[in-house]
Length: 136
Picture (cartoon, rainbow, N blue to C red):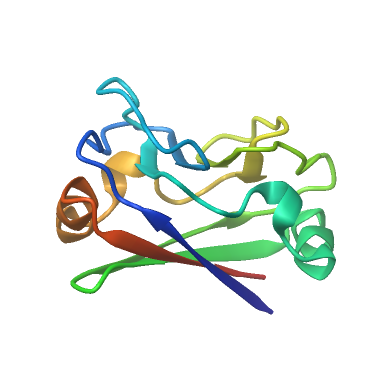
């Protein structure tokens, strides 16, 4: 199953964090927010369809999250877990580690913000829209 939504890029996106990647409903970010790649989301974890949430809460469930701008494409692969509460009102975080909190949507991810394709990050730093597709 797939679920797609759109977030916005932002001039402060640097995509330098080595262990996480984040999307947020917040419309603005500072220059130190090096894990955030998308802002102004109309969707939080709370808004995901119940069947998607149920799949993410399955141990070792493979998850792919695809990121697309008009000029670039990348994807991150990781896993779900039954301990993910999936109830944060504003943020979604993909983690290379197995740390779990209300913001975590994926653990043991194969990429963090710093690993994404340069062309994608350049588009986001130019405030271009980002299509996000969660595939479970």
